Length: 265
Image (tube, rainbow, N blue to C red):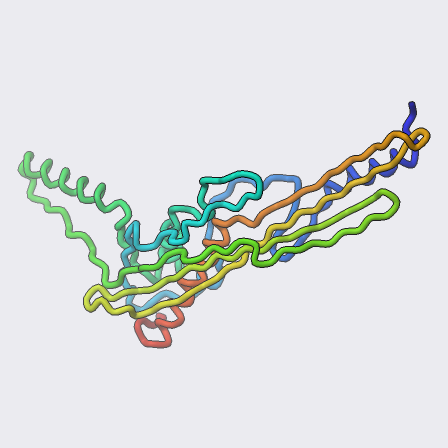
């Protein structure tokens, strides 16, 4: 049984359409995976701000900025135990503060691995004491500001929809879904305990899918050939969280400038 030439053409069109790159806002759908790269700051404005005249020293403790939502990944078919948001958001926060103005705005002291740091310093002291060395370990740098906050909201399916068309057995459709992640960020004075600066930032995540299908009766109309294909892509939650955190850091800097807590060089 031979397949009609018209059907062969339809199949060729369907297969070739799967390679199309579709742009939707900041999201790009492509069949080629992206190469592994070092994750850099997403905010160009944060990179290019001037250095601070008197660099404030800040500390970020492990539990001072974490996921407060408890949100699980959404799935309509079975339960998922994976969290929707990364459980180490302080890594993005430390990177944002540390790389602001190429590291010339804030002084970030280590507090995430403080136990290991203290143990290593004790080992140095005991070793020098055993060998009667006079050199002393320099004191740790203390922070004047504590960074507090966390991921306070993750909303799924705030917006969803799609569109499609079909003609003579050839169809195409497109669907989208929008989620939102919200973070809270504040700077607290160590000397007084006062909350000096505070901001809330929300970032949307876009998910899109494109599908195409074709069906046709062949032979005497008693046999049906149907082929489907499609592609979908979700915006990275980690990248969206990183952008929200960097926007929050930028807001903190601008508010601090307005209130006179620090100045540019």
